[in-house]
Amino acid sequence: LIILFMVAIKQNKNVDTPLKLYPLMTVLVLGDSTVNAGTMTQAMLDLFKDDGSTLTLLGTRGSGENLHEGRNGWRSYDYCELSVKGKTINPFYNNHFDFIHYMESQGYNEVDAVIIQLGINDIKRYTFQDYSSEKTLSAFDSIISSIKSYNEEISIVISLTIPPNENEEVFENTTNYASPEEYRTNIIRFAGELQERYKNTENVCFSTTNCSINTAIEISDVVHPTTIGYESMAQTHIE
Image 1: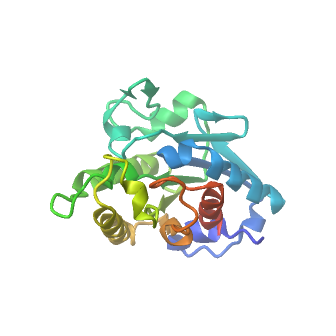
Image 2: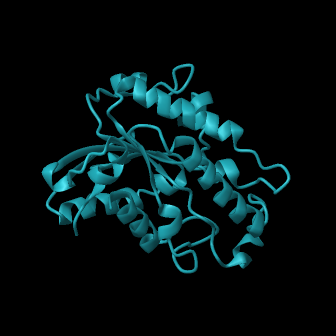
């Protein structure tokens, strides 16, 4: 496996240096239940080890080396507006999303890259008629701006939101989502809007997880990947 993570995340600075020249890397993964599962981040750790490289993950959640900032059911704007949701604390919140506050309060000195894996919970209930990404994109703006205020050189990787299970029967017993057609279409719309909004933003790039996962066999319920699906996402993040 040839890891080209640094090439991908530095693409907007025209840096053409493979990760093999950077054997040590520190990454923070921010997201929803697809991050909170810990399966994808563990797969990332394993891929780095297989390559003879070392990945250090930051986070207040997870255990051992497999740390992250994933929270079940969280939307992008929850990270910007809430200090706590249910019983789950938001360590980034300081009257707004504050990355400097987060890094200082956790005693972290540096991070090479932040992966943002959000969007499922923002988009899932919208019909064709009421679809709006304005609040979500505004939250992405706040998160990205705050990360850059800490260090403009941090590479920010936006994971393009994965589509739902190809088997529409899984939607029958849930009220948490719009129709399969509406949800799938809105996810595609949202991915396009993210790319259009940040395509020229320095040190921001996209991980095409929305294309790499096989929705026929790698989604276990409506939106959560199987173990193989999470491994596919991990590999996409670092290729």
